[in-house]
Length: 626
View 1 (cartoon, rainbow, N blue to C red):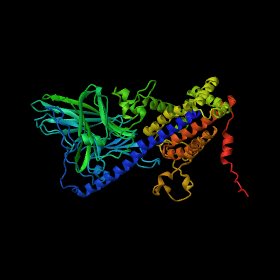
View 2: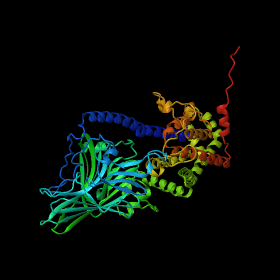
View 3: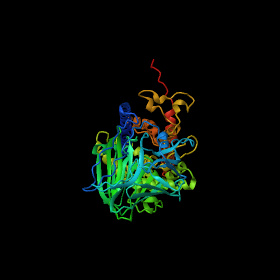
View 4: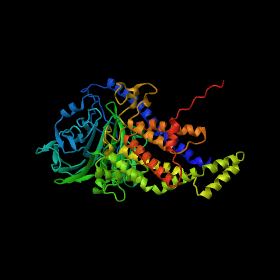
């Protein structure tokens, strides 16, 4: 059975893919649905138990001091309102300065001076161009509150009055916050300190904040600058093992730090004293991050608490104290990234890559890790860069996938050529192999020895057939990862009915492509298997044809496995991104053409059409003997 080692390896790899998919994707999805149901039930119970707005029953999570003698960063608002109002009503209830750029919309809250209302104008919730823009930040009191806050805290044991979340700032001048149009807010504490906050925004997703305090009193004042990002309620996450969603940062020499919402809720708090750091929250496509100056010494922290009957999560940092003499001023600079995780904007560290983004422009410490390239970044990064390069040439990511597939085929052509050539030679010596089996039918040891001698004589590598499969696995994974994590692939259309390469094929052959007005996926038990798009079906046919290119294995069990494998893969890949299915179908087609050409050149008989005819040939019924 040595000549079928490649078959066994292929089956093992296929099983690894199936089991791995179930373990890392299927099972987490079921767990996520179960957890979502529990969370939804808990939230409903909490809403029923929460006081109505105006009752004054709210509090903030307690936060320990970051270091001896130093104050703590505020643990959120002084009074967290239960999310009983709509987002629009909460926004309308406070005075604001509008934010308007081609990429961003929203407003700065003059109450608290927070950046707490932000929409991403170039990204929509669905592929429909008129669907609502993506909401990134929302104010406290709104559902799923998510905001950034900057300011000062007094030294421990002192009583200086500093602006807080309820303090009302005043805008100097007028106008909207936009590109090349910063705004300045002021606050007078009435005790000799005047606070001034200048906010600027660039043409992408970077806010620059300069906080200044002017001391008009008679005694020096010591204050600590801080910045925080806070989220109220546990955000909905996809729950995939290959994607981190939650708290993230790079803490100087301590490297990348990641915490899921569940883990930080268990730990309550983790902190670092470092320089050259950044920290924030990451979702699949969107993120917020605090970017202190790279030479600033920061006390950085991830924390979780509870306020207003709901969990809260926070990333924050505290800088070294600033002492302001009478008649003098002190300043603190901060930066906030809040937007889409576009590779060209965030940056990517890779040889010959031109996408430096903020990572390079601001000399940040591996800011490209905001995008989860994974452990196999040496595969996923070049895969994305290649797709992005051809996209800018042809204007369609689907065509870019087809081109990259051809290039991968050409790159590994020497290996594939040897593999298919070895398979062709093995077919040519099949009569001799059958004779060896018959001659040594009762002596397996001599049979194996004779087989090996035949392989050496004909220069055949019996396991060479597994090379094309082994090559395809890392390419498949890297493309899957790129389609899954990069926002460039989100809502990227192909042709025809594929409007989003990162989503599954929307058609379904079980409804005759929409002619039957019934959704079979809602059926119990079997419903999840009753969504099969046209592209997965095409992929299954190409895989089946590739299998039929070789003669059927003599072993009946292997024949059964090979006959069912295309069907299993067809249904398994039906829920995968359409771009991945298109790649697999195109790759199968190229493999059939490549293998046929190589086998023909080596004089081996091409079994494709003969095997197809035998598959569809009807067996003649045997008449009973009379």
